[in-house]
Length: 232
Image 1 (spheres, one colour):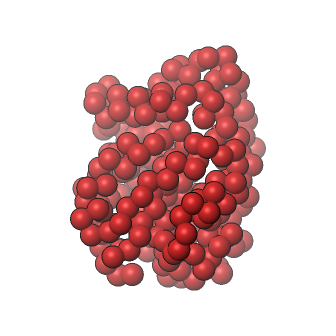
Image 2: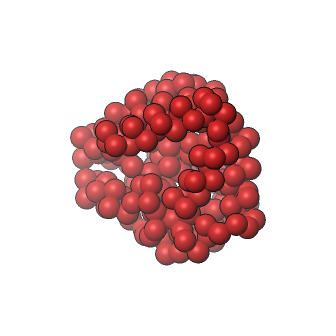
Image 3: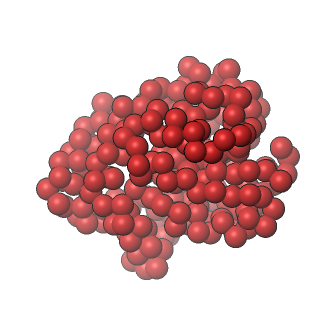
């Protein structure tokens, strides 16, 4: 049995893993971390995660959670048994992304959270899932629970992250990469880029999913994770 730590994405909570928890818990010890909601930078989040969860673990991160997983591996490679990065990236933000995040932070500070989140739905989901309905409502409710404060802090944390690509060729633990075929926020090319730098990486492009692949294609993601975990 492996000890799994699930790391939610920016302004997400355990609900982003709702479709995975029961399936994973049948075979593994599972914990959903909330350090991203309590710390201000990725290095601080990783340090808190490592302090609060002694021992060796498999880290499974979605979006910003994948960036956090890479930072934890950088800080304590001997503590990370394996990594799974879902809809994530090893790159630093481009100048364009930095501007977009800065503009969004200004809107969050003005209390215009709903306006930004609703505009973001078409980027977060595959076109088949971006229409109003239970899935989008669950996403908006989840990010709404995080509130403006977390949205601001976590965007700043992501903006300040390092470019992890130079560190990837030295990665020795097993690595699973999964990306939605229609992910506009961390496109498949970024997952392929990581796979090209890590010889032992397994890459899976998930049909019918955008950035929120754990919510959009939960059964497919469960199959990928369980099959991969069985190889460790």
